[in-house]
Image (cartoon, one colour):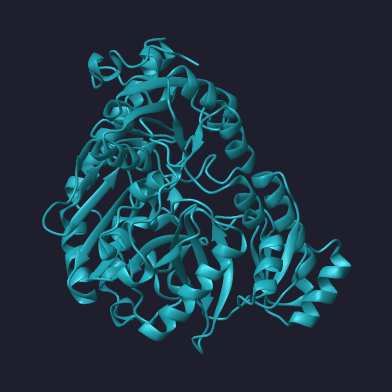
Length: 505
């Protein structure tokens, strides 16, 4: 039986919170934002119908507080919670707690999150269902001796991966037997720190692979469709920077086979809502299951632009127990879309995260350009959260049209006060290998040299100096006890939090 959702609490921040709120507004659904003290002046707080303070800046005291978020949703009379991505989006315990509280979790069933979130159980399930997987162990290794034996059987190079992992954490490439024990200890320590789970399993390292993922949508009535692929091979530190759809190497026949494998994978775990099946493709165009992300992906906009389907609206529709309004035969890919993740990182210094005040911010505009952003002029990029502040997405009639449009959009995008990945993204758009579609996930290691980037302009250097002065003044105000509860003095108008729930958690 379908159920109408009238009010949604968005349990996230930044650009994804704004993106979800926009979809809700178009559907006539009331939105409630939550924010930490560091985010009091953030765009998602201003844009929602209500905003509730949930704690200090550290995420474990705010955005990861399950009890506080659920209590806030009930106090604000919400029907549902949308977790976005990251934070609590793939936490099976949170999904169960939301439902136990009488609220709707806009995402998959907790059982699917649990099954596919554990990489070893997911591998076992895929093997049982005939979905191709990279050769390796079905279970986590239990000792260095077992790891050494298994690695010899699989054959070097191998990949150590955290069983409960994601985002490249707990992952190590090992090319020689003498490096295995040290790499295993390092991977286990990182996995324990990131996920509270030090289990690590072994896969054969696929040399020069492409990272291709398939978007799926599933409703509660048993209908599952795929929306084509996304190319995600431009990465640094195992994290994506540039994505596109469709992939330059995937033809209709391969798309159909990968799409069916993705649908089979989703059906195997009784999946409902939006999810993504990630694959590796080797030099022979054979593909292997990598993992399933049981949530909305960062790069979902490229799929939206080539299919015309709003994935957040579909998530809400499915959460209301309504059937998908289309079948697989209705899905058509039109044109080409590219996304560049804009992060506060110093690309000239090994992509190290940067912090500071956004002194100027004028996003690119024009036909076929989409800017999903979580900042404004005067926003502070802090140490507390992921450095991605926006996603620049373009649509073109074909791949070359999209590349040219992205070049223009990157040149047009003005942001001062922080270092960003814009110069690197511009480098990618100009590189012959990217233009030809001839690249793998080692693109950054093989082709990128910081010295190849143009030197900062005089205007950029002046802006950086102004940002440093601004930051120094903020520190002085804070030391004097005049920080005004985390709000940026002189930059945030009082209307930002007026009549917004009044609650503090």
